[in-house]
Length: 177
Image (tube, rainbow, N blue to C red; front, side, top):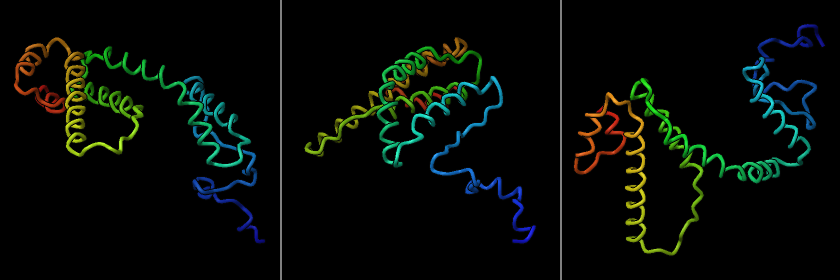
């Protein structure tokens, strides 16, 4: 082998597909490099998870294990998110930033819902139930959003609340901005 071919190129090391000679079935890498106290908790959590699945034989078994392990803590996570959604306030930030924070919490809560699929229900009943659920969810988000706005938006909030029908939450956000 020539001297040029035996030397590793720096660009090769940066390639996400690069495999180092020490990489193998018995090794794992943590996605985040430890940089100090500011990311220690995240790094430590990644290491703990990595070590707990180090000797699992297949990718399917790893995913099944992780799903069982972390789905148990959804109750406490859901509780925290619901608590957060009622405690988040605008606190002088822009309406857009406040709405983005609220939307993030709503999306995470929505992703945690595991509803069983119903297969034997009439199509018109399905449409009605879907419309009803969507309306209830939109109304809940609407009131949560208005609840956290700064007091300087009190008059705008009052104007929006007397509208018939009440606007969707994203429309209300646009009206306030």
